[in-house]
Amino acid sequence: MVNNRLLQEKTKFWHDAGLNNLELFRATYHTFSFAPHIHDTYAIGVTESGAQSFTYQRTKKRLMPAGSVAVVHPGEVHTSQAANLSGWTYRMFYPAAELLQQVATELSGHPCSIPFFSSPVIHDADLARQIRNFHMIAEDANSTLLQRESILLWVIGCLVLRHADYHPSPCKANPEPDYVRRICRYMDEHFAEPLTVDQLARQAGFSPFHFLRIFRNTIGITPHAYLTHVRIERSKQLLLQGKSLAVIAAETGFVDQSHYSKYFKRMIGVSPGKFH
Image 1 (cartoon, rainbow, N blue to C red):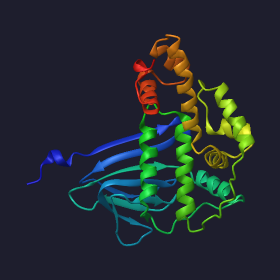
Image 2: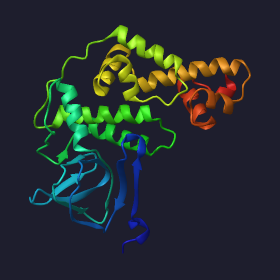
Image 3: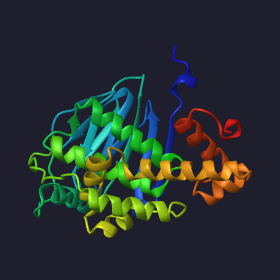
């Protein structure tokens, strides 16, 4: 006898206004089946547990097990359902075709068409981990737009570079110390502001994805990680001045005191209250 409590189905759908109203979805299904349908965008995601059975491009049913990545092209009819009563849990996001085309173009350094993926099921454990990480960060109300933008562009870049039928040969992203120092100075001066990838890329005269590659290759960390470092270092000065954690969080660009304390301990090793 099947315990109905174990077959509870859960769904969550939301938009990320900062990412051009990117649609995101996560669900656990057991008995629900999708009718044949299409999307105007790509549908990209990862199966977290269980497995789903689906049809795509009018072919026989395919299986998407846990840990696999899904890529559905705009306009392609597909269906899906649980492969068995154990059901499946998955996370999806729906980027516009133009975004993948933009990333492919920035990777290659010349105009590219919309990327095509011959298989809707990709077995790439690292990419699956990155997609899941992006999705969870996008769901976190404390995440910053800079953080979400950076990870989204990086995930799409990895997907296109590794698995598109036409693999763009990446143009070189050599370290650019002078340009990156300029960006770092800008972040040092504007650390409390809600910075974006586009804003920082314009400061250096780069396209957004190329900027991320240059920054990582020069500094060794993402712009978001550098900005967090600057905010934490500034907060240490304010702690020594005796300011409250709530005031420090507000003055250094964190969402709230809890958000600030979490990052402080992660980077310094102790809570702000124990820092002397």
